[in-house]
Length: 521
Image (cartoon, rainbow, N blue to C red; front, side, top):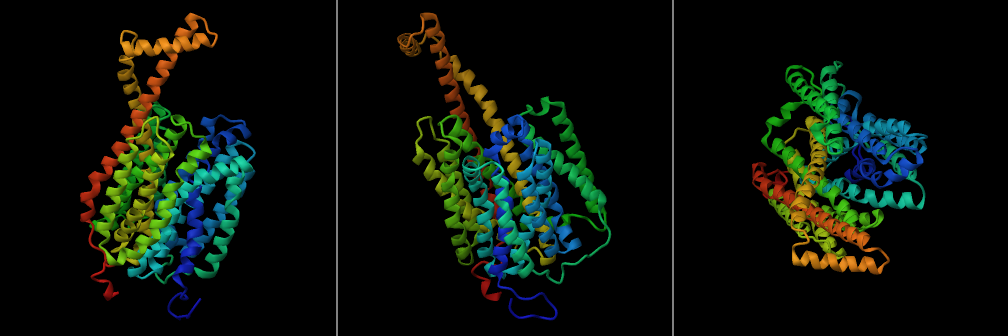
């Protein structure tokens, strides 16, 4: 700590503050993916099915999504430092209890607590960083913060697989304890509330909080479980979708009429902020959609074990790790909107590269698109976050970052649901199209089936069994090729979505951190 001023909080080196809030953010974001590869082990240990064990993921995401948008209000109501310490303490304690869980209901309950406590960590840390650094240095701060947001979800499956294989799935949760303790200590020592963070009103917007929880919670369950239930063919999915829409309608009407709203929607009057939130939603859609379907492709079609699939995706995190700080440094020398456009186009190109993969793809065919995409994400996250928040008043920063992070997460859930649904539907279509061309009257098909049949007969099968095996092998080849084409189409669709949003970048106002006006700050 440096000089003490009577009218303000103590002055602390902003990079110390950055490390303090980054620890908690990294820990929370890591937990969104670190459990994924451990689900079969969790199911076996707790006498549950793998499908039932996925509620350990869904419960966390739902609780996280409900708390995210009200974080700004809670920071004003309880105090930001107090709220952050409560959240980190609760998250760390819930992690310990998740590791001790004796059955699946207990694990799901503790994951709900963990998700609720973790929901506020991202927007609080982002708001603190944006306020702690001068406008001209915000790019560097967001570059540092972006490391956790982008790298942690990619590191999660690798770390989760290693801990589960080497020790136990319970260590996936225990690993949070030392990080949480370090974050609590640093927050206590170095973080102070600014003067405008105060309990501004004793009135609580119960209707706003309640309807937001209903709308976001129901929507998250629909997006997370819809594909497994075949969407609206399941009555409970339809019912939850209706509940979500009603909840959001009542929430919006209430927030526009109440004098003390839990979420200040007036921040959307600023064109740059509204556009930035939409772009971040699309970014979450594409990033998380591609992040989920690539390891599925690697494991189901290319034969990668779970841990090796996670390692194969590590180059994306490596590229981001290099690019994030670099982009933060050069932000003040270039128009951030141009950097953002460049990042979107490069990311789209890498998705098109992935759309050209085939069943003979090797490791390097995966490596180069991944590492280039990781670099492009640095040009996406840092300029977009900095530009979107540039004109937001400091007293509204907590509210603005809460909505910003919520929409990224909702976009991510929509991207996962959309990509997996597209693949599932297109597999059926491609199987029918390709299968129609696989019949014994085509010379090439007849010759291949004959060769297979001879091979099975040589292996000891009778003629009839060999014929059935040859037919099954041909159908299996058709299914694998249909699956590959479906993954190709999904990557291509995500790439085109990125290309389509490039013109929207220039609806953003050129931020004050640009080179031609930095001298005035």
